[in-house]
Image 1 (cartoon, helix red, strand yellow):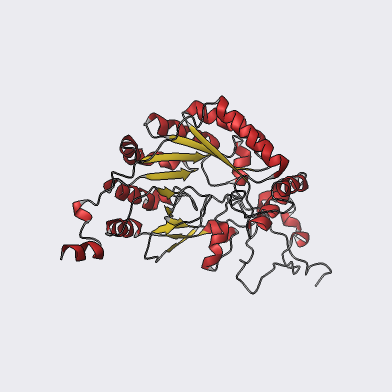
Image 2 (cartoon, helix red, strand yellow):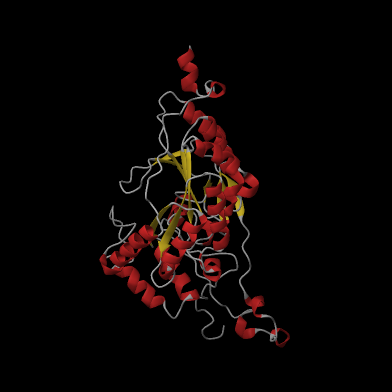
Length: 381
């Protein structure tokens, strides 16, 4: 073996994927490291490959795999004091959008998978979601409150185009007159305007579209399989024109990466019809910190240290601070400046002048579903 050939081989970016590597999750007792053993390495290429195209050296593409999720419930409950909902539905675990900053990445560790490339390539889907939801909503003890979708992984990620699980969930919610709030970064949501528009007329639906940048190149490396920025703004326009209350989330704002675009994003989305807006500062809990730093040094090596320094300034000198009330917007001078900029821009572009309130009083169990729950069957005996 030649000297140095047993050194670890650095991971490289893969086309169409956000994470650079696929590190072990925090529950794994063992880790693996790829090393160059000298066979077929870049240094030993034969003369016939000297003039090969650079892309020939790219890591192989990773296919997306789907596994059936055998969960017996579909509604997840939340008690976090700084999150404005107490229940949500996630049709998928993992997300093919591949957003490097996604705070849901660490949840893949619970499945024994990596929050890195596994999170965006090894997806779990819930084919029985609509049936499970109908059963849960039909229970005698169920009390209606706004259902959130898109709070963990995106309900409109690419596989939804074929699987249509999110659409089936919306059909059930419409059937029960159950209010829903959706966050997405995919134009695919416009497919379901036929369901969402009638619900919105009855104050049962609102949508937030996440727009993090107007720069298509940045979006391509930061969130590679999400809709392009132009398509997201087009979705805001279509949803608004259909009478669906639509807002924009400039989330997350990443220091020295996309934060300079905040006002431009808000202006473009206001012109498209968005009436509400929000933002968050980059969050790097658990495995996301190392994943983000690896991505940063791959795509922005010249400013990596500056970005990380600014991130630490928003988290009391650390990469992340999980304190309630601070984890979304951070603390310190930089975070305060971002907060001020957002407030001024929101005022300038007439955002958040009123709060659209979803109506929970219309909820009802339709006759066709009243016999689908054991609780309901017992109540008839």
